[in-house]
Image (cartoon, rainbow, N blue to C red; front, side, top):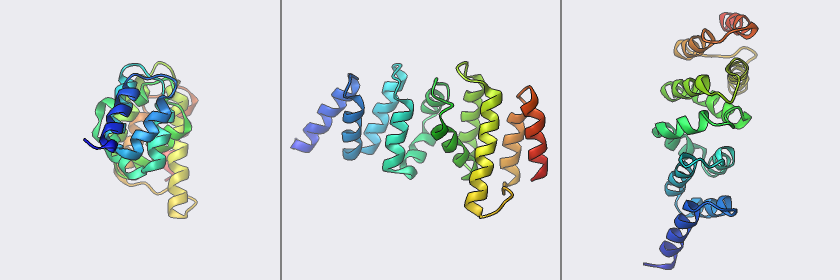
Length: 179
């Protein structure tokens, strides 16, 4: 075993034990082995760790593509992230909107389902934020004033808009009809 492999296993042990240097150790492990670091982040969250947003930001900044790929492959991680107290964080909402726009609708559906059952947030307000963010990103990416969504994307959003209560439901339903 060479020094790099030894250091990798030392970092796995350090990340696994948590502690105050958790994010520093996770970042170093991420630089060595992205997939293993990602698994260790999931392991920490499953144990009740609170590095939801910080961990997500770390991986997303290193590789958006790998983060999306590994996130989409991990149903438990989707549950852990979007059922957490930090699920309403703008970074996570923007990631969800990007999943919708990228056509990753099965993953987006799972994330929206977890948001809906999340007792730490107000789903009515979060759904409005998700729709607003999705519309804004669509307009930005397409260089238009009106969002461009395909039928499946619209259907997904409408399905979850129908599950909310209050004034946001009427507003969001009307906005969806306008596109």
